[in-house]
Image (cartoon, rainbow, N blue to C red; front, side, top):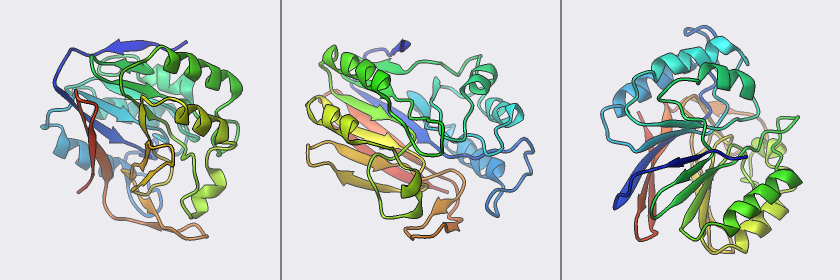
Amino acid sequence: MSVCYQFAEKPHYRLLQLTDCHLLADADGDYQQIKPYLHLKALLSTFKIQAFDALILTGDLTQDHSLASYQLLAALLHDWPSPVFYLPGNHDDPSLMAQAFGQPPFVAATTLQAHSWCWLLLNTKGPTPAGEFCHARLLELATTLSNTSTPLWLFCHHHPLPIGAAIDLHGLEQPQPLMDLLSKNAQVKGLAHGHCHYAYQMQHPAGFAIVGCPATSVQFTLSADWQTVDQGPQGCIWNFAADGSVQWEFIRL
């Protein structure tokens, strides 16, 4: 059952999305020829002074599946000035996340409700690196959508449609039921995800947007084989207005 967080009424909301941090137990540890902890620390230090209503972490926060890696993240965010929400990626261990993120500013909510918007955090973690959105998850989402009339945006880890890169081997499996459900609900304005280590945006034929958030670690190239490139830590800033409009900006240091 989803836990709901209620935001105060405002004319607009500003959210920061970060994803695919791939932290290790050692703050000086290497991932794909970079130090992911230092990348993330630099990005957080730069944007901490800006006013956000929430920080949303969309998975693959760890690379080595260790409690210590999550504890490093919790320490970095211990005085973050807004609520921090999170969802699991294929590398993540939800039980370790709950253990490390048990104190504010972390909030274990998956439904974020405002006067003019609703944001849903979907769990697409499966038994393999690929994503899974099983029948039970689909039914729960269908119920939530039927009870929500405000504009709605979804966040998850896995990408629902191919982007033409090696990561497509581990995208969301059998995405059509989810796409069909979203297409039938006009209040759904878009879906944002991580996993691809690549910034892009596209329009689904049903009218909602699909947005890939770049990684705080390294980016993947649009190639059939696995290639990474260090372009500095990146993320996405979201602006949701009370009139139902939404804007986003990809950021990098």
